[in-house]
Length: 284
Image (cartoon, rainbow, N blue to C red):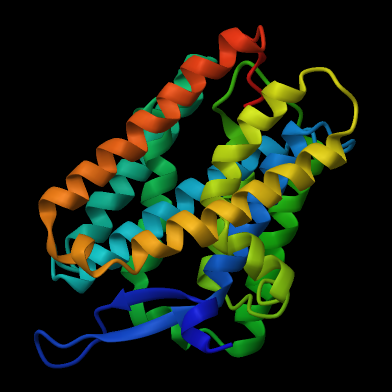
């Protein structure tokens, strides 16, 4: 399998002549996604000892902030002199807001999640400076980050007062992984494989758990969710990504995006009454 097929393609604006850029590949980002989605799905399935697996969502927010900032920098949006101060202010302010307004509903507020997006963006703003970190130190940073993420999943329990300081543990862990080099563990084929199907797996595991209700057999539920996610990845996600017409037609892209929004909402509307579930029972 080629490198481009297993790694996240991240366009970065490297230092050099104006307007030039060079693509880099970070397998550890795919691997980090695999770890995060595994924690969420296993925790929601009721696997013992992973009460804090829901904190995998915080890892996703940091990754998103990193990738968004990399994309903007590759298009020369903003400058590396001013953006770190702006993003740093957002991170500090949003973190303070997140702690001071710790309620169940604030967990869904962009204001309490912005600091995690900003934390990932700060890593992207470091640019080539990240590559100046000695190889052994970078590897140590990555392992330390993974330890923090695992510790959050093992130590913390669901807390109605989220978000709060508990989120800082996996978020810091994700930042350390992005700063370091985690191709060892995160580059393993099973972790990479989970990282590639993270999106359909997140989408499928909730309705599968709702359909299962209180029926025992979390392992079967997880396997079924993975099977559905893999099928969706192969038959839906990949064909859409490779469709040349979608790449060149804004109208088709918009229509497809609306369909992707409406279809899950319709599925939820159909599923909840049929299985006697309510929003309060959704394992998120």
